[in-house]
Length: 228
Image 1 (tube, rainbow, N blue to C red):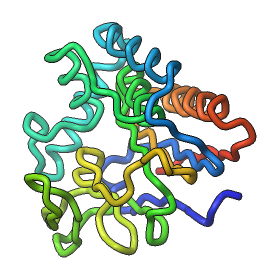
Image 2: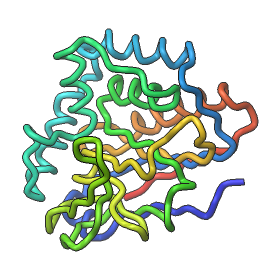
Image 3: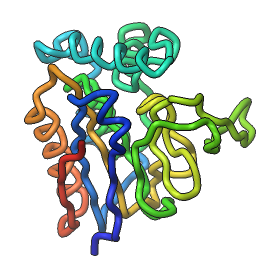
Image 4: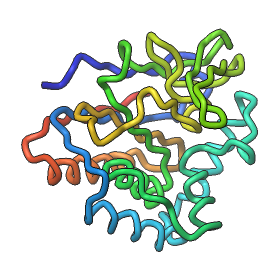
């Protein structure tokens, strides 16, 4: 059964980027593995084809850089997650495998040039909301391999729940508390797009993810909604 988990986008974020839309995917009864052949093949294909993205890919990533600059971030230093993956692949020619589900959503992020987040719903305190931070929020992370707590900058766009920030700078850095592991069975994904990426393309990417998860765990429950 899908849990009571309702992601929201604050009016302040909508005012900042009226073109923002996100495809939200909730999944219950999922399965994850440390490694899986189809996930490995999807990631390898996405890495090999990173330079052959959709026609709107470069403009979409430029829109994310503009959005980051609007709330004071420096996208050259802290790019959106899709740009960070792309830069890593172009520089290193590979991406390390993490686990099957993360590898698949990273593959889709590369193929569609779209930031994708994957979270463990069971680790959340309440529902996620995308807000403009006031700087008092807490972000639990790691520094030099040790637990650390940071605060977002005032005006920074962040995802948070009742316990604190779960992802800084819109989709730049996810906190360890809600990361997907091989034990995760209740999953939440968010595909975040700006103009000129068609909303239908984000929905297609989400559909591919649900199809893969259904092959991995037949009988799972999933629903897809649009935020923003």
